[in-house]
Length: 184
Image (cartoon, rainbow, N blue to C red; front, side, top):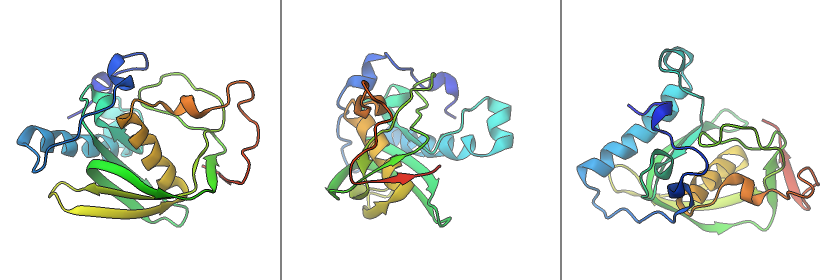
């Protein structure tokens, strides 16, 4: 089981690497990593398990965050209607996106970043993601709102990009043109 001790922190060089594609069919070790990423995210959202193991709550986790430079992510999040988006994917990529942007009014956080970093993080309002699930079945997801933001955040990790790289550091709370503000 992944714990907070397994999550590497901001400044670790792996967080700035472009992660390697996972060769499919995935080997046993890669399958176990993908399963453990999802297990962490789910466990971190369960108050009893999170308290017992000292887990910080998360809605997504990427393999580079546990010092594995491979293209794997797990997301477990509900949208504003309460629909659950729970996906563990190999080699996810954004294959299309809207021109329109969105951002979280509360800003973004990250399990690899211990301090709060203020500012709006512009993201695409709508994206289509393609990847492969644990059984190597190709999955295509059309996402908007919070799920779209979470998938972009996790896929950024696969490309060595941190959420705060997108913030306008001179004026972190400047309105983002043509963007949907999402309260969370």
